[in-house]
Length: 134
Image (cartoon, rainbow, N blue to C red; front, top):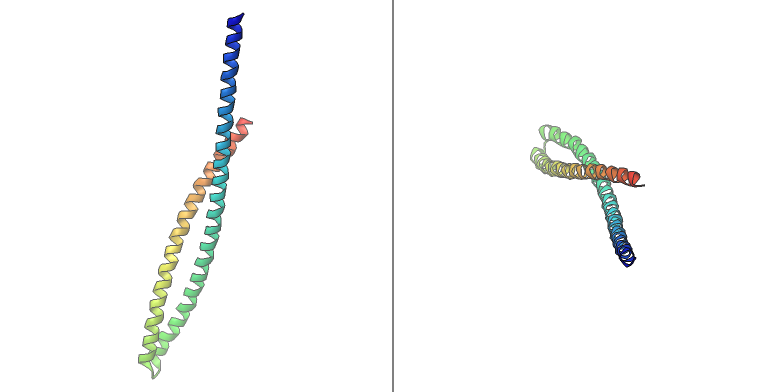
């Protein structure tokens, strides 16, 4: 009888310990999920900011293309060839810098998109696991 009670107590302690560990693991998973969601939201806001920046840069670039073409024509026609050529060179340099900024931002945006797609895949797996668990 004493042996049975002893075994029951040991099993009870074992299951209580396992339950505590399970709760701790579940809490850690919940914290990680919140952390992951927070990072996901930050990545989305950064993506939106970069997309806005790229669109502004592209608009600026396109406006400058038209202005550069006008200056190019004016530099060939007008009496002030030298001045127009200086302005044309300046605008052309600014255009190149703007184009470089656009490509840099687009590269950064593609990296964020890749990260978001990975996070989405992981989130879908976690949702499937939670559904199976319940």
